[in-house]
Amino acid sequence: MQRDDLVLALAEKNYYKKEANSVINDLFGIIARALVNGERVSIRGFGSFDVKKKKGHLFSDPQTKELRTSNDYLSVVFKPGDNLKAAVKEQNPDKLSFLNNA
Image (cartoon, rainbow, N blue to C red):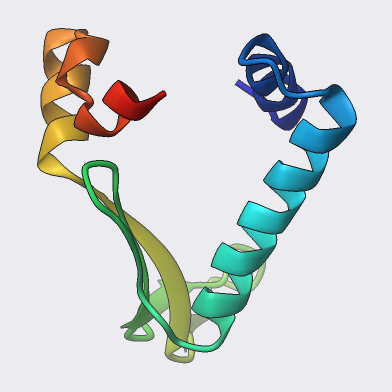
C-alpha cells in the first residue's frame, strides 16, 4: 500500500480526497516531528515508533577491501502492538480493537 492508496482508503470512509490528503500529511508530520525531537509515539493497539541509537560496526569497504568502522547512528524502529501482531498472525482484522471505533 502506498500513500495514494491511503488517501483512497480514507475517501472510502467518506472523507473528501483533499481532506484525506491533509489528514495523512498532518498525521505523518506530527509523528515525524515527534521522532526528530526524540519522543516516542505510541498508538494503543497498533504499536509504537521510537528512535534508538545504534552502535557503529566494522565493515569491509567493497572497493579497497579496507576494514573500516561506521559511526554510531540514530534509527527509527517500530514495535507492533499485541493486537496488531495477533491480527497479522491470524489474518483477522477483527483482532484490531482500535478499528471498532471506525
